[in-house]
Amino acid sequence: MTRGERALLVVPERVGEGGLRSLDARVEEAAGLAAAIGIDVVARRSFRLRQIRPASLFGKGQADEIAELAEENDATLLIVDAALTPVQQKTLEELTSCKVIDRTGLILEIFGERAATAEGRLQVELAHLDYQAGRLVRSWTHLERQRGGFGFLGGPGETQIEADRRMIRDRMARIRKELGQVTRTRGLHRGRRQKAPWPVIALVGYTNAGKSTLFNRMTQASVMAEDLLFATLDPTMRQVKIPGFDKAILSDTVGFVSNLPTELVAAFRATLEEVASADLILHVRDISHADSEAQAADVEAVLASLGLDEEGSPPRMEVWNKIDLLDGEARAERLGEASRRDKVVAVSALSGEGVDELRDAIAKELHSGAQTHHIELDLADGTKAAWLHARGEVIDQKAEGECLHLAVKLSPENWARFQRL
Image (cartoon, rainbow, N blue to C red; front, side, top):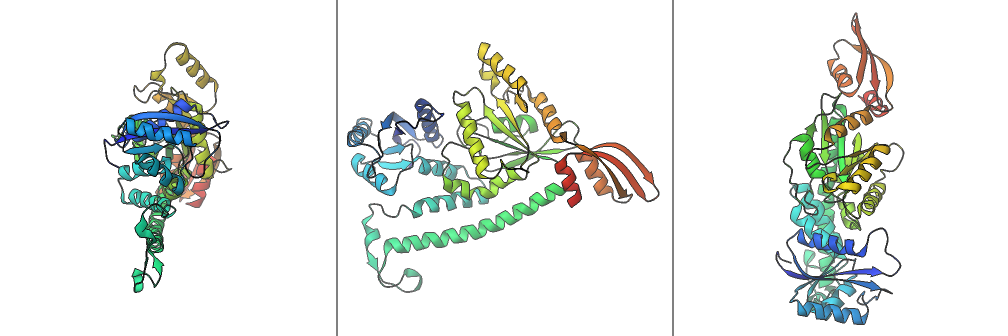
């Protein structure tokens, strides 16, 4: 698959399984995924399926129509916005004389191109190997030959396909070992941050919701922020100013998408654990998008799969972004709804509108549920005193002999953290 390659995009929908997202929106999103890695979608078509055909997914008439469309448009690549079995992929390749890639394969290609850090590349490779492991039943005839050999070349009678599977398993085991070390290192860094007197705020949201633009606006950073799906892949952290706090850390994370491949959720679990350890999660939504509600539901589903809908999870706020793209009645309606709802702030990350109100709302949420605790410290323990001043609201403070007595308002999370110091 190369940049500029001519592609035919087909989006199947099972009759009666429309869901929250419209078929037109699915077509647009799939085209956006293709554009994210420079593929030229020369034609697009949606198909309603009465039943799933095990051999080709589509009915015979539909499959023939797809083949004709590919030929008419000189397409060399067929993108199917669904999960294909290896058999379906092979059948469609034979019918259309095109390379065929499904939704999972397309997202993996995007992630493979965007991963910038060593950890990101390892995670993508693991997901890709997991995906490929089930696809070694394709039309490559050389995989059916048997071969003998010695040692690592395979035993007598081992087929090429078995050898390839074994090589994939071995490589996956090595990557998991390396990622295990990354996870331990990341855990140590998280532990140090939690001991430091700074709250961590994590941005999550559907891809292209404007997380990176908001991140740049709030931190004066220059993280890549483009009108592209998955413009950000590797997590980024920067200092951010929040009223009432000496310092806070804002974390920008990978965007979510509907039907995110399970291989990717598993591979990126170490990265997504950053979200689980935050003091506050900001769910950034593109409120101007026609499918904003469906996108929000997809994000909530991924967060739930990470256990972030359980008791003890970080508190969550919604940031309704891109209000600059709304006008007239639609804008007034959204702003009014946001003002009436709890833990919702409407902003334009592009223009800066509402961002100061967002900072105030973050400060209020970080201090919510705070209780006053009377704490006694050694006068020499400046580290804990500084921690309390940064994370809490010191109401009273006085020194008596070798002791420092403080009355401090702390959130339940910060009180628990202080006790662990």
